[in-house]
Image (cartoon, rainbow, N blue to C red):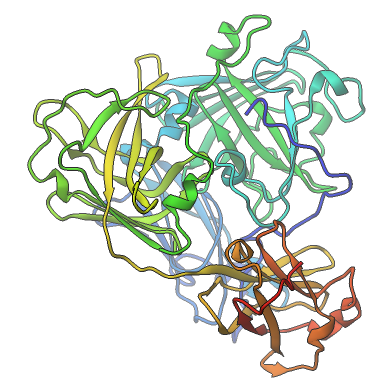
Length: 602
């Protein structure tokens, strides 16, 4: 992370609308409601789960034609019913909002209480990394001291795109929208007007003792505040009550709310979090971008020495094209079963098995793992046939992150080896068939930490690829629209599986069209003579006139992606933009030829 420095593209700060800021559809309903009408019992209900009263659901009682908003203890949300999990006892508040002819109207705060602490909701590793664990506390400092020394990062604050998030920063995934990074080196820009001066900024202390509490001492601003915080481990966000995020005076007025409770989408984003370092993203009011604040733990601060560097991280060495085997283009569903002869082993940090002899339990070969990389879904099956399903992401570093926690499955009668008790597994190694070159074996590893909290090995699980599955030669394709303010709208993904006609539809509206393009990803790698012809364009269900011969044929953001730039702001079709304004749907139909006899997409 410290060396992950990117170049800031000059003038590329684009203000994209954050997903979730604007509803996909909106209705004004059949009756106007005032704020005083939107109260519990009349407009909505607050219901606690019968088996776990720390699970709270808010349900609208209004006609379904009203689009519903909520201001909950965990931030803003949309839709009904809407459910949140609250770990700590206390008094909380919720507000209901709806669309009216005068705009969104919110009702008064409605109080409700949580009587007990639910430890199940703070078991995610993030709670421990942030606070030290239940009953503990942990201090964090901005990574710049009074001597101008930064210990982990290159400075106390970086700048990132408005759509950057955990997926792009921690997982290294390519995301849609405004994504870029300037990892500003403080020592190189010290004295510039927008940089802070070297000083003792104070600290920020999180604890899980009697609740989720936060205490900030801000020397630069003369503030000493105590309050509470809410950590959303699923969406990687954090917000405060009665206390502010530790920051510096230079940007104090550049953010409208330092508790992470401002407008839609502006809850503070947790961009990265480890035992030693943390990055929290804050949206700047003007010239919108993310101010990425860099913090280090008290332990790291105190034990770092001058000239010290972050210890080099040892990771498994995977071949460059490993992902093409784990997520092959010709097979969406990959089904594995655990090896009966060698089901698991302890592995070093470079992913190599240590060869420790183990005696597995009977039936270990029935443990199965299946993933569908077209839908990003997974299914684990244990020895007894119980299944655990959800969605997953796979980073370029080979880390699977699953949407749910898989309960521990015993693998041996003689030791404490279990599968899997967590939400992440790392690809340790793959092996292929000498005869066919196809994937045969996959090792996935669970992280094992020592008493000091340092990763020192993996418990590796050995899976064997099963034959069969859904074998389809397929390429993802998406229609992308953007307006003059660089607000993007997208069609659902369409799988291109061969010659034929395919239709892409964007559901939404815009009166300010600027660009429209259709990408078929990675198709040119296998099909260099690929061609697609636009055969129909419909605006709100009605076909419009167009000339396919003037629509650009080219490549997308990489040399393997085929692109038709239907409305190119910098090309021959720039003057047609107003014809593509739409109020409900915009659809494009193409005819695909996997091999038209020559290279036309170039």
